[in-house]
Image (cartoon, rainbow, N blue to C red; front, side, top):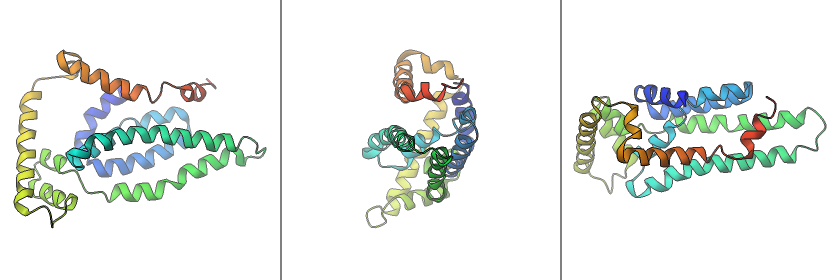
Length: 208
């Protein structure tokens, strides 16, 4: 929980796409060293959902953000299958191969994340309006999205950002547990809790 609070404080200062690339490397490193260090990557890794919501079309936003959570389950299923398949190996390769397979994903994921277009919303929040317009052009088809529409999109982001600043001024994390915000918090908490409320979590801590 402390890691997630710290994530909320640190993330606004970091460029999302580069942050995700760093998280990919940090995640592989932390998983390879000790299980306790996996808490390090939780400081930043949930920024992926926010980045996805900011760069994809509104009609696809729900599908993409839900797909990110589904990938957690798919990854756990694949890793469980690999471990089970290697149980019969009596040499050191029974535990070395899972680590090798984990690092195979690092180069392509890091490269893709590093070169992803920046979030125009993040650019607007940093006051980099021209960069935000450039980011919108990278995320859209020039044949279908004119310069005027780019300007309108960025203007909408500026207006929304200003409204968010006015609404959030003087507030704290305690507001997440008041009124209608509490239901949103409960839904978000349950979504992420379901990812760790299964037998694998008990298996990881079996040696403690």
